[in-house]
Amino acid sequence: MRRKFFLLLLLAVISLRINAQELNCTIQVITPQLQTADPKVFDEMKKGVTEFMNNRKWTSDNFTQSERIECSFLISITKELAANKYQAQVTIQSNRPVFNSGYNSTLFNWVDKEWTIEYAQYQTFDFNENVVSDELPSLLAYYAYIIIGLDYDSFSPKGGTQFYTKAQNIVNLKSNSGLKGWRSIDGTRNRYWLVENLLNTKFENGRVAIYKYHHEGLDKMYDDMENARKAVLSAITLLDKVNQDNPNSMFIQVFFTAKSEEIINIFSQAPPAEKTTIINLVSKLDAANSSKYQKILKQ
Image (cartoon, rainbow, N blue to C red):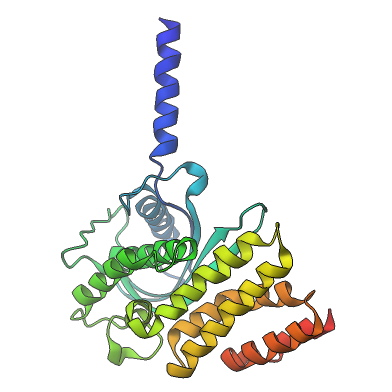
């Protein structure tokens, strides 16, 4: 009897490892400017968002616990608009492990300043990707698909297309909601333009660059640092060509918002000629941080 019990327990553990969900998402909800709302409401919001992100099955693929995508949402409630209705800005970040190292590379690091959400204490999140859903689960699902898509792009050329398509479907469903961030006319740096760029054929080489940078570059650093660094340089050169055809795009900004510090670290030990080449490239592609890249020369 004991032997049978332990066999069943082992099978249960194996099943949990094979069928783990895709995301391992850390959620924070802060209210730095609110004075009247009950803090318990936001404790429950954190719990509900955490369960929604981590317990939902987002793909048809099987993940082990160790393969789950590390990500985080910092939800800063900035204003109470009405009962159970809030304005927020949210910092979303996701990471990807690098082969043969304990290092995690940031894939996505973005601040969305246009969340207008409704939440009542103990509310459950209902989401159907084929029908219009409430704003909060729609926003969470949109970014879940973006995070997963970027992760897949980093492991295989343009591997994230099916997930970007799901994110774009949410954009289409929400375009008539009257809430900011879902339409092209709401600005040039929003949810509409992010997924538009990711699916637009004009940016296909940019998505190939994501793969080259991570899988042909970072993942090979342990075995062959020199050639791996050259692969990273090749990826950024490809991004330069994308930028020439599509100047001032959200795609390029999103990439360098996530990668600027990492690029500095990668090329700080490069030969002088390589340092000069990369500084010239990134200073043009990420002009806002051009002075920061001069650190490469000082090391």
